[in-house]
Length: 132
Image (tube, rainbow, N blue to C red; front, top):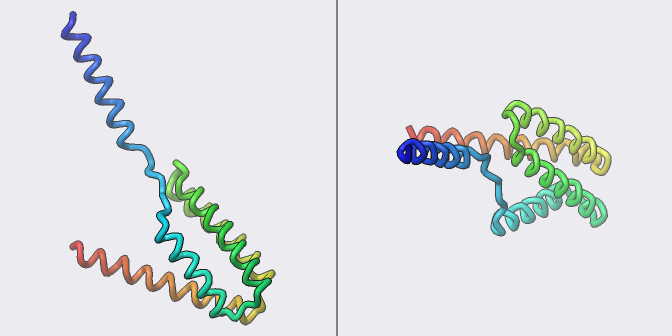
């Protein structure tokens, strides 16, 4: 009888441990990442030639987008659903940016974003190649 109780307890503990190991990791922001983001937003605003009030609004929109992005990434939902939510967020952010930027500034903003995404893709591809 004691052996059955011990085996039941051991099985319960194993299930508990494996369930905890499968929890979704939370994306944490360390201070150096935050500093890099602030620097990137400042550089972006400078490259777009934004004036003081527009820069402040730009930073507000960008900070809101980053906070919402972090929320979405930390949700325990299907990957496709996350992508859909992030796409919607990007579209909403673009609409806000269009309201504060001139047509030329918005075009430049999109071009800079495309270049950044391409650099990220290139880095990921390079890492994949190195790991093979």
